[in-house]
Length: 492
Image 1 (spheres, rainbow, N blue to C red):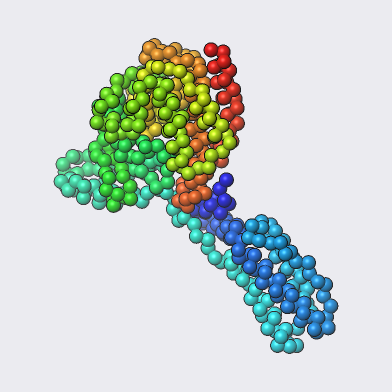
Image 2 (cartoon, rainbow, N blue to C red; image 1 turned 90 degrees about the horizontal axis):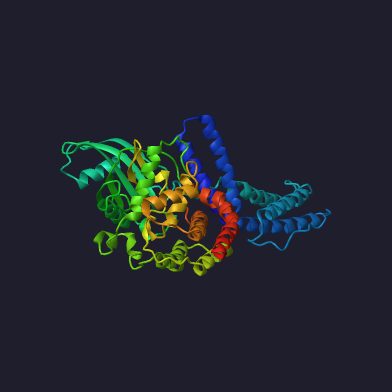
């Protein structure tokens, strides 16, 4: 689990961003007070100071007892702890500091500043020691002043476009919106106008410094060729304009595309809107079309894209075997997460229970849901975010897409319509197996979100939702999903 210091860094960073964006003095005072409290908690995690403070206090206590004794006073020996270390908890340090303060306060009551130089010197040094505890609170623990969001501003973007396209004379960005959704890319929508093109509506999609996923497709360069391939094969996608691989502009690679017409009609788990039947039909027919695409494995765009990893595998069984034996272990290694018993158990189960299927694999989007679909009226105008796409079992796509349509149709109705649209029948066991595989993928993402929070100061605070909200939900599903898959497999 993340160290408390890392979590508090994230909270302070988020609070600082809010503080800078509000003009409400009451909110600013609350945020500044909360920041002081968090700073105190962060200081308490640095136990070396407190151990040193206590050790110096013990020396002062022993010296003070000797002074009082020489002056004829009587003091009770103090029972100080001798088992403290930097690994001791803040509560133990706090109790020992309080105990020292009380014992030293009793000694001070026996001393007189004007009586002797020894007493005066001792009391001055004692005061300096105690003051060092309170002065420490004035120290500000360094924390990230900003998250992993790239510094893409209207001014910087306009300067880049003018340098990239000097023939676009009179260029001016008239609208600029940096979207806050998503984990693996930063997206900027902007309208610009110049003497050559007139008005253009464009989208910038950029790699970010902290990655939740480490798929090859998370590299915007490979995703660029994937989008071009899907455009070539006739799927509705955002038309790419160019790929920028000169990182000197914004410290990242990025794609610039035309902005597709339409709007998002829901989120990853579905839509709260009343969905017209024509819209659902468009969503499903485009889904079938994607799975029915005939891929030329020699196509240069496929080879340049992240599909290249999957091109050697000719059957669903082969792609699934590669997925659980190579792809998932590579993802675990790339993230740097420490495997947990649940994760190892689930991956081991997947390796030993691969469904037999000699059908050819299909192109999977792997996140074909409302958050990644633009609708112009009731028609899909663009499928977005191709970073997790690959070749594989249609079941891997179906489980997620059907979930986003669960308020419209159940899995039985979805599979019936899918069979009519593609001619494919997906076995019950393949669906159950995929549910376990999807759970593993989500576990890796949730574990890595916690790992990023603990290891990288500029991790976006929204990663906490994956790590702390979804992790318990995922783990509680593991037993039931494996048991269901095993029941179905034994019944076949």
